[in-house]
Length: 399
Image (cartoon, rainbow, N blue to C red; front, side):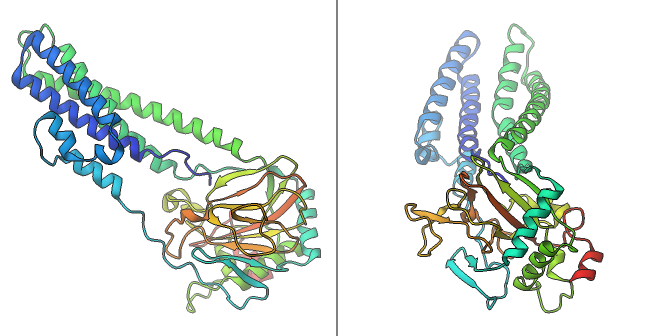
């Protein structure tokens, strides 16, 4: 899941403050003036308030004294409280990760909080080679990219439009329509504003839908690798990979009879040729309860196995975590950056056991110089049904 490069929170907060200033300016202008004088006063007040609100430092713009003091009086206003709430709302606290077999052979923790492990010789050479050969035989295609969080982005953009431009233009349009009408009343002004608001909101929704589609299409450029899934456990490489992963992950509780493999997505083999890469991204999704419901919900763990030795390029880098004291660490990088070694696995947890998103696990597949092959299993919060996961018959037969 590729992260959203920009946040709408700052812009939304500013627009709430501006909207309040515009409404207050209109109310004051109506109260104090009429006719031509009204237009002049309204224009002056709105211009000054938008400039003052937008260009204030963020920490100052949230001050009710400075915002409301410039307009009417020194008092705490609704939108100032709302803006402060938006600006200071803490992210959910990341709890404990899912349990694993801490005594698994070769397991070595290289970073704590969040936990990141290397597992030495997780797969033997024959299994690694078989996974590569079976992927070549099946054929690989451009690796897909999921626009994680698109539902939240749509809600944010709709809220931003509704509380900002749609409201402004609805009010200003209603005022313009009432000019020259000597019988205009407050009621007619409100009716015009509501009609304008409905029409503008529909247009904004269409524009946001088009933007979301364009954004989803453009994200594909951030990933240039090719991949394929191998869900046939009659094949030696896939079977050994899933068996070892099942031994590594413990059931959610001792009362759970289902195999850990029921929570796995089918193994995915990914190929990076020269100059191919995967931009910084997250494996978990803040909107997983809705967007990933059909594939097991939130991704709780990622297990990567390097299928070949890579002498140059193709490292796995965690841009928000410091370097570690390990032989696999890239020497000249101050961030955690792991050099691929054939048969070794990398294990980390994109979300805690309750599905809380952990943004610290953002990572990337650095630009490949030598060809790189990896195999991946995602362990989800719930059962992963086919075609994303392994079938019950396959699990019962081979596991």
